[in-house]
Length: 192
Image (cartoon, rainbow, N blue to C red):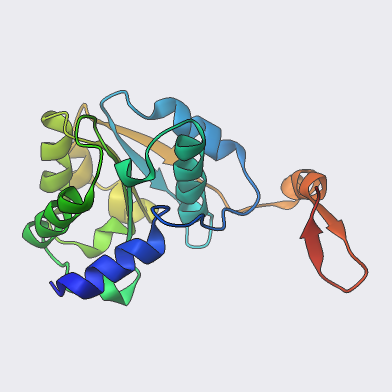
C-alpha cells in the first residue's frame, strides 16, 4: 500500500477538511441514518448509477451536521484507482490502521463506509470482526450480486441489514424542483 497516495485519496473522499457535494437528498438517506449505530453491517445495494455513493455522502454530512466529528467518519471508494493496492482483507486492515492513526476522536465507534467493497477479496471477515468487537459502525455498498450473495449472508448472518437503492425516477422530479430553479442560462442553481 502506498501510504501517501492512499492518505491523499482519503483526504479527497472524506469530509475531514472540506464539505463534499451531496446532491438532492432522497428518502434512502433517512432510512439508512435510522439503521446506523444498532450493531449491524448495513449493505447499500443497487444497480450501477442508482445513487449508492451519493447516499453515503449524504449520511456522512448528516452525521457531521448532528455534531459528529468529521474524523470519526471514513469513506473509502474502491473505484478510485489510488486504492488499487488494497486487494485483500489484510490490505484493508492496513488501511484501517492508517485511519486509526489520523483519527482524532478515539473514544467512540467510528462510522466506516466502504463503497464498492466487492473489489477487496475477503472483506467479509474484516467487516465481521469490526462489528463483532463493536469497534465500528460499518456501511458497505456495491452491486446487488456482489454484496448480497450467499457467502456474504453466511459470514454476516445475524449482523447484516440490506437497504436496496433504485435509480432516480420521474417520481423524484418534484423533489428536485423544490431545490432548484432555472436561472435563464440553461443551468439550474440551488434555491436559497
